[in-house]
Length: 335
Ligand SMILES: Nc1ncnc2[nH]cnc12
Ligand SMILES: [Zn+2]
Image (tube, rainbow, N blue to C red; front, side):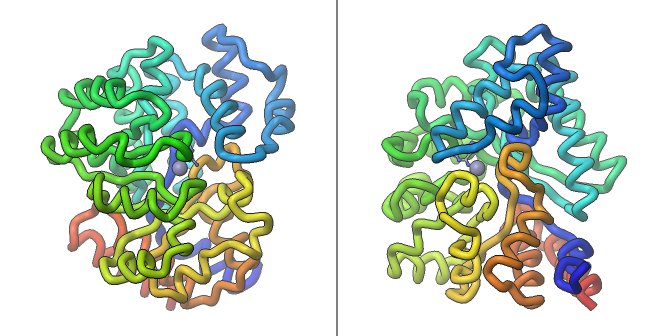
């Protein structure tokens, strides 16, 4: 193993952009389909993997929403979440801020509270077993209506002490952040932090709207912000965290080759970029694999990799003391 790969493995990391439903490995999908008597269009895990050849975000989302239909019971959500944390533990992830797409479940008749109980019990078990801390971010699906988003926010109310933030995910093009201005304001009034996918496929203007209209605390992806240098200067001046997902961008054709990925440019510009896995079961790798493949493709240095790990904690919603404790651990692990 190269020195750089060994460093990547050893560094404590936070993961800030991870859709729980995107950690559904084909083996678990097939097993849950059987357990719950749900029809899926694959006879085997191998067949599912063969279908994972995406032309763009929508092409992926079409399969992503089919896959999650196998999640039915509280136990399914628990098992899915715990399986992710086992993998995260193997990658030396110490803290994760995980996305859940409740509308992907409530829209097909699964109770919101069933999802929440299953996910949260696995988060508690994880903290005890692996000493990994976590926070939960509930994403509104931007291709659905504002009214549906408000219904989801209403369902959040009994769980507010267990929810850190709201997010915005799903089909970006044609669904600008401003569509959700009022529901994000209502979430802020409830004391929730805000994040939004922006600039994944949509233009730099969507990143600007997420900042100005949704008042987000982080931008998920943000790649297209690089098209607008005034916006880049603003992101740098405000130390805005970008949760970047290299293997996702490759799989969804945001970049033609990983060598063209902007992660190195982002660091060179002084942006607070982080590396994350997005939907690792669909895109071919968990967080360390994203670091390794990106590092090899764009020539990240040892200092870049250390900076990325530090950024992952600096951009998290942990308290200052916890963040500085993790930064000290990174310095110790870096040697
Ligand atoms: N990469 C992604 N972009 C937008 N919405 C998503 N939901 C799951 N993965 C997503
Ligand atoms: Zn995402």
